[in-house]
Length: 182
Image (cartoon, rainbow, N blue to C red; front, side, top):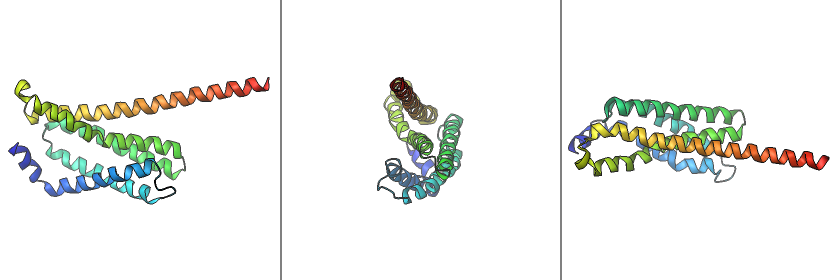
């Protein structure tokens, strides 16, 4: 544990530059998703630059990964997906495509929250380390892959199930409308 503390202390400034914007991002995210307060544009203007700072600093922090290349590979993949999703949300927002913006923003937020899912997974690894004999440098990467994968899979499943349900409802509406014309 002392080694972990020392590793984070050695790059405390970078950690703060990563964590503080991430905290603001997570705080502003519900305002963007749920449009609270109504017609407020400042949350959207704030969330995109915050997301870029979080993403860029995540790449920088991966240099100091406790879990080595396994952790670094998870960060590189999921951080790239996060930034891609954020970029797509911004692009759709600029084009006035609100539904697509919302879908991509939900992806970005879910991926970012993957780090929160990673923490209980790490807790399980810490709690079972007497049985597994795994050290943090051996399980951090695995925990990152599990946590980020769970969030990414759940948001994709949810978005696609909503899309399928919307398509089915549209088809039902079309059938009802055409039946009424006959």
